Length: 274
Image (cartoon, rainbow, N blue to C red; front, side, top):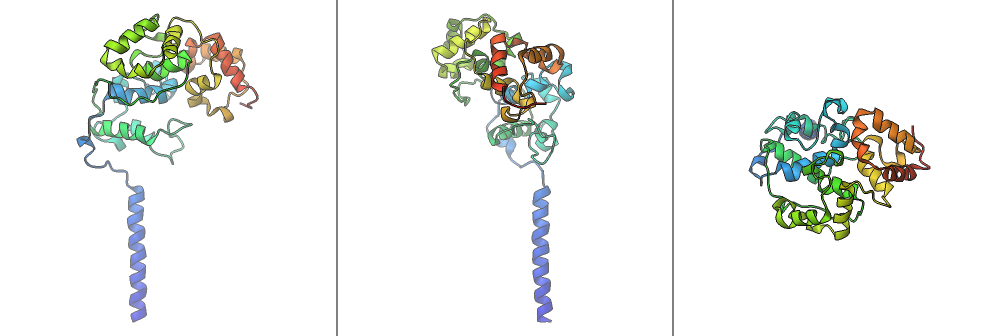
């Protein structure tokens, strides 16, 4: 009898532990209290993530991949969320499920910080909160490629380079904006060379020595994979230009200059693609 009770006790212990673990593993409810955290601002925190991580494949109007338009436009993001319920929102669930073969972005998961920003924003009602970016955390970049710098620091507010609202601005005007516009003051981290590079690309003057690896990472990797395993390895300038003209989701790359396209081609040499 004593052995039987001992056996039953051990059995119930392991069964209870297994049940509790299973419940924890399958639980995808929204944590309580997220709506009480500091307000997450759409324009300075959420929109830049969507532009950087999603718009290259989902930013071309009704022709976006899967029919999902994900860019800096608030209403487009709102179509993919259930305000107050992150796990019931397409936008959040598709980027936070590592076991989902269709997880986005397809080649590089969002960071924990980015996931948290999106989760808290949705939990707080997914509002079109507009805040000054003076205190927004921006990582400095060492790049001197104007197209790359524009995509990092400017596209979130002014749109993709090809249709930018700031075409033609000078480096002096950029500096004036940084000095006088609250939402631009955080761009004081840019060097004079970087500001000039942004002005040059907005004026249509290409960087004489663009970094093909960086351009591929910002313009191509989200759809074609990391460079080392790219499915367009060995592509020629003609291949890229033809695709930009014929593939709807690539038309935004029409802003790339011949010099920039050639830099991408050089970086893809020696890589076997499909």
